[in-house]
Image 1: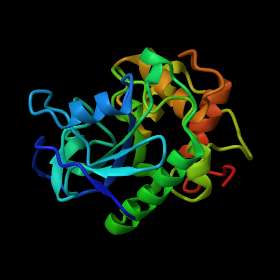
Image 2: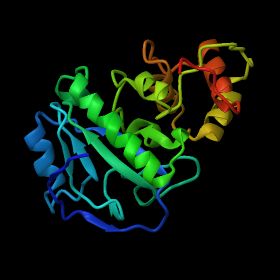
Image 3: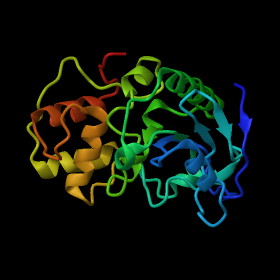
Image 4: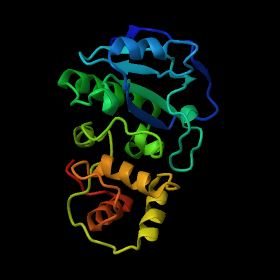
Length: 229
């Protein structure tokens, strides 16, 4: 891929091998504001890459370095998500500034970038996640409009299970135990369920554990989720 070099001073040394990709939206009014902030030493935030709405990809931090994109986060037992991940910011105003669908050119570039990073570091598709997956109590991005299904069909993310679904009839506590086993931090029950729904059932995000949530989660915990990919 071709990159626009836009180095940020906001990085330090990794303490863990790279095993994850975390996708974000910028959540600011425009691309310039987001890019300026990610390069501002006083902001103390950054990402390895930024993908603009026209599909341009800015490279800010060398992948060997630890960018500061995830904040307080965890996934599948990893607490220092920044050390273990590549952070990709996708320009979008987000829920605070007029959340909108991601343009095709932008998603095309995201797919190419994710595929390259995945192959370079042998990252499993279960570890290609959104910011809301790793920080459900704080974050909503990249949000319910992000086309996870398109990535899943290319084996760049887990699919939403759609076939041979069965309700395990877990109690709510049992569901949360299973959700934690899958990877989520479940200390905030409603927000963890909301994050799960935003990722795997975006048409209804209410934070309520129901039969469909149980069926989807059970299928995801099987060796091979049977989705639409």
